[in-house]
Image 1 (cartoon, rainbow, N blue to C red):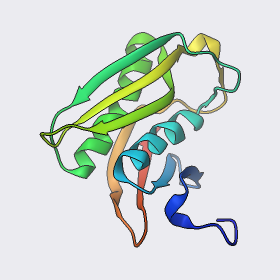
Image 2: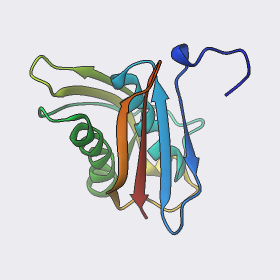
Image 3: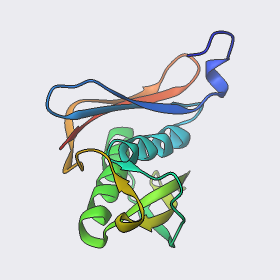
Image 4: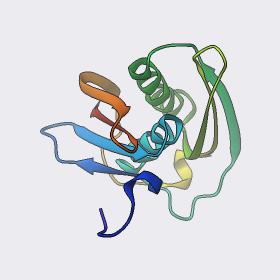
Length: 146
């Protein structure tokens, strides 16, 4: 974190070293922002999306669940669409639904439009998965099987 910046207003993500797999961390002032940052972090582990243009809008809902289930469901959706459609999100907007689920919208592009720069994730590991509020923000950490 940059000295002097308030953590509560910042969003971000990063990859962290992990043996044989990829581990990502994400944070934001609220849960939905944290989930959206996790999507961006996942994509950046294997693709350079700089210069890619959106080719489609994707909308879907995730059923009600606890925060861990919603995080896994969201990241699994990215991997599923990558495997079945050859698409990946360029940006992500996550909104809560009244029943405890999520409404997700992202602008996506084809994998042909990006440069693959790392191992493509195959699954989200449940080992050492975490998501929750900290003192002034939400954060999560996820290991991706590659």
